[in-house]
Image (cartoon, rainbow, N blue to C red; front, top):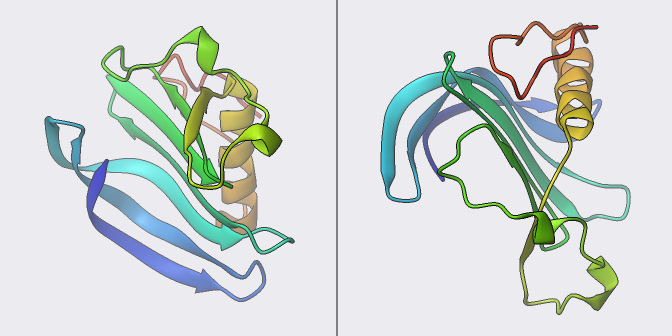
Length: 141
C-alpha cells in the first residue's frame, strides 16, 4: 500500500500523529487506485514504546480497508476480495514470532469500528460512525 498524500497533525495530548482530510492512495499491491479517499490514519507509540500504525479508509461505495501494524503484526480487514486473507491468519501467538518475522491476521468488524470510534472521539470530538454504505462498517453509535 502506497500513500501519495497524507496530511498529518501532531496531538500533544495523545503523543501521536493523526490524519486530517482525505488520504491520497496511489496503489495497493500492483493495482493502481490514484485518488483521495475518506479515511483515518494514526501513528503512535503504545505505553511500552511499541510503534503502531493504523489506517482505515473507504473508496466510495466499493471497498473499505483497515490496516494496523504493531509489534511485527499486520492486522487486516477488507471488503475487497483482491486482498488475500485466509481464516488461518487469525490471531497468532506474538510471543512465538521471530523478531524479524511479520505475521498477518484478520481483525473483526468490532475492532475496526472501535478504532474509528476512538479516532473520531480523540481527534475529531465525536465517536459517531456514519460509514454505513460499505458492508464492512455497518454499525452506528
